Amino acid sequence: MAEKTIMEIRKEKAEKWKEEGFNPYAYRYETNATCGELIEKFGKTKDEEERENERLPEDTYSLAGRIVSMRIMGKAAFFHIQDSTGRLQCYIRRDDVGTEFYNKVFKKLIDIGDIVGVKGVLFRTRTGELTLEVKEMTPLTKSLRPLPEKWHGLKDVEKRYRQRYLDLIVNPEVREIFKTRSKLIQKIRDFLNSRGFMEVETPILQTVASGAAAKPFITHYNALDIDVYLRIAPELYLKRLIVGGLDRVYEIGRNFRNEGISTRHNPEFTMIEWYMAYADYYDLMEMTEELFEYLLDEIKSKGVREIEYQGMKISFKRPWKRISFVGELAKRTGLTVDEILHDEQKVLEVAKKHGVEDAEKLSHFKRVQELFEILIEPELVQPTFVVDFPKAISPLAKEKRDNPELVERFELFVFGQEIANAYSELNNPEEQAKRFMQQLQEKAKGDEEAMAYDEDFVRALEYGMPPTAGEGIGIDRLTMLFTDKDSIREVLLFPQLKPEKREEEADE
Image (cartoon, rainbow, N blue to C red; front, side, top):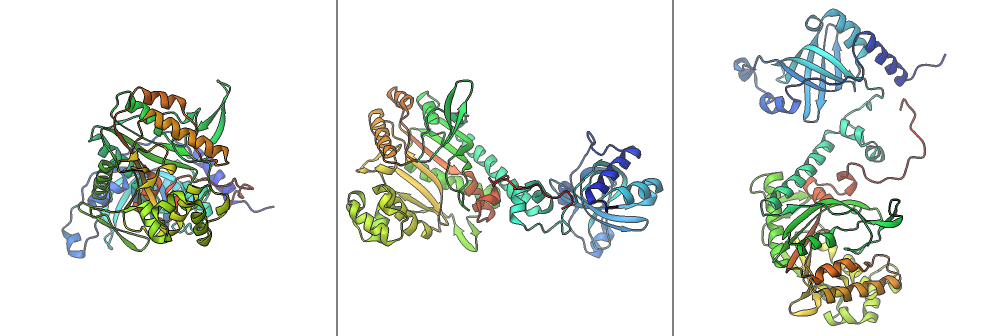
């Protein structure tokens, strides 16, 4: 007869829970505390003298969580339960919960991974660890699959991303990453709300793929019998709202770009975009510095202006460095700014020299962009505003006041990664129409990332959009920065992966 698998044994235990009067998939459980609350309030380890004089409350606490360790010692046992806030040691004795429950249920039917409710009073062990002395236990959910043997050490990256639920159970530091992410989003909202911004929602399914340089995902809208695009950016809709008189708006949401996957790129990503009437990109540079100061105060600690990222100190002390896109590229290539903007042959030669892939097939300004990414971006470790972008690669930005071949745009780089992108927004409808036409020409030449012509957006501008500045920040990369992670997959709860070829064996 074949030996039973762990899952088969645990399924039998779930049935025995029922025989003992416990639903292995309970409906609810009343709690009055969390592990984290008790540890925060009472958890500090005491020395012997302090413990002698300490008086812990005699209140009864009710908690619920997953059992993540267990040590049985005959008539008593220690175990830890874990909830979303932390992990607390529990102590259970046969004499407190009754011989029948202790011997028949706890010792024989409860496993690591099960979810239970516990009620009891606090005490401190001889080593000083805060512990709940359990007076009553209620089994709540039977775990049919066992946690990894070394539950605190799930290291298989593929498995961690594919089974994020398991990763969150067994790796407490992973939960902290996503708590930080959630707090970042909350604090960005607080920052913008305090400045009179209004949060809005714009369509994800759009009939025109525009607002950014990216290849879109395409799907079909059955009710309308038309193909639509998953949005690559909310920008053009948000600017429509500025036209409509909503002077300060923002949206936090998902964008979709049908491009490669890397440690810095995921085709599905989260952005915050905000637009502010009667402002320009200089205002946004100052506002961005203020936002980071606020986030550092709230996420790290009040007054902190330096963090460690990937072993390097990153200083956010103001003012941040500002460099010119074309000026810096001219320094590194030996070309003049005029040659960078106009001399296709010289730029092609430099692009080949520096290993730009398929340089001959790229348009002139695609080569320029690739050169900047290769030569300049990796060196932008400390917070740096890159300004003075060529107009040809910025079809939604306003011309620079003293040079119509450039635009009023900045990108913020930290540790070689683009964190933010912002413009003084183009609000001249005739110029915008002309820029869209240029994008169509690029698309006709084979540029899959060129923007489509958005006729309705041009019509909106014809009603008049006030002077406006707009900015976008990638939440994923921002979270990477604040949690010291070098891969975007570490800060996405469910990163995109290829489907599994087969299901895992049930008892693995």
